[in-house]
Image 1 (cartoon, rainbow, N blue to C red):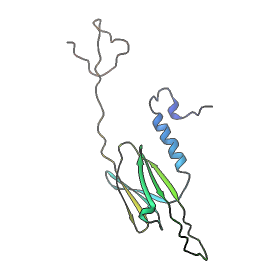
Image 2 (image 1 turned 180 degrees about the vertical axis):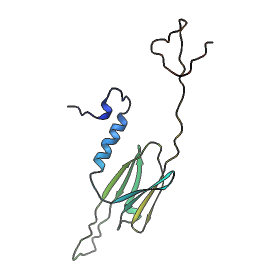
Image 3 (image 1 turned 60 degrees about the vertical axis):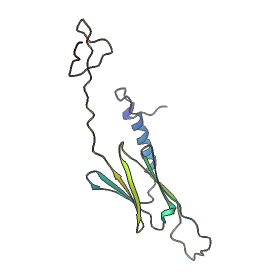
Length: 155
């Protein structure tokens, strides 16, 4: 049985990558560890901050693949330690964020148990353009022609 979404409308052609991104986001938001903040630090800059107390820099990895930012943490067990009580678990995590098209990761830093991942959002470029209409000799646009506010000049 196929699932109906807002993108399954015949008027929404070419949006299946958005649908896949939304599916990934819904699957990734299920776990709540480690906690994080997302803040706007400038007009064109964002920062994701994760609380990763107890993790060293070499136990963390930040990767970007196909607009998906993935942060992994894996603590190494120290076999030499003997715990009388263990309330702080050495646990691994994977936290992923789907980034909008054009968002760039500019760097990452670890400070006082907080991992900061800095992002830049460049200002959007205008993508408006005019499509010329080809007109046949009888004055009618040929079948399959495109529509625009301007008409192409006859040669």
